[in-house]
Amino acid sequence: MYRYHTEFLLSATSAAQFPASSVPEIAFLGRSNVGKSSLINALLGEPAARVSSTPGRTRAINFFALHASSQVRPELILADLPGYGYAKLSRSISAEWPAFINPYLATRDTLAACVCLVDMNVPPQPGDAMLAQYLDSIHRPRILVGTKADKLSGNQRVVATKRLREALETDEILVCSAKDGRGIAALWKAIHGVAEAQGNLRTAK
Ligand SMILES: Nc1nc2c(ncn2[C@@H]2O[C@H](COP(=O)(O)OP(=O)(O)OP(=O)(O)O)[C@@H](O)[C@H]2O)c(=O)[nH]1
Ligand SMILES: [Mg+2]
Image (cartoon, rainbow, N blue to C red; front, side):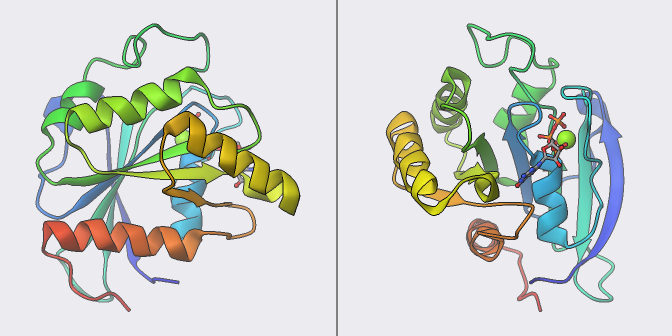
């Protein structure tokens, strides 16, 4: 478990409000209620991000700065994005997103990777594959996570992982659970890998 001091920075509802981009940033994306905020909290080991009982309520990007021990300058920033696709299936991945989400994904210069969450308990949705394709099209690195794995038996997990690999056309799926901690260490490893690739990251303890 990586231990950071977590600082809530701000909740942005327009591009003008984004915090200064200075250190590697990791964004969390996925359908409403898929567990983005819960996964952030599982990574941090504390309830920093608000877990919603009403899906789709968050329309802002919430930014968290992670500081190593006593450092003033953060080492990483995590961005908790609004969910997509709860109310209806859109023809375009971005049709129902707030207008500032696409520019954020396309132009945020410190965005090292997007963690894309998919619920392992339901069949993959078209929007999940569209999001992965969109990120590829703008050359944004992505880390694909199948989440809520705790709800499945061992055998169901194998079947669901295969189904996800086929739907997203990749073998690189991290199987995770915010509830029992499965996959959290592997996700940290992936996050530090992309952040280091972007530079700046000192070794966290
Ligand atoms: N069993 C289980 N439940 C989870 C897991 N992750 C999240 N949940 C539950 O799923 C619900 C939604 O979790 P959130 O973390 O708020 O999901 P979100 O993607 O941030 O939702 P929005 O911000 O509304 O888009 C909550 O009831 C969580 O307790 C998980 O790994 N396992
Ligand atoms: Mg949330």
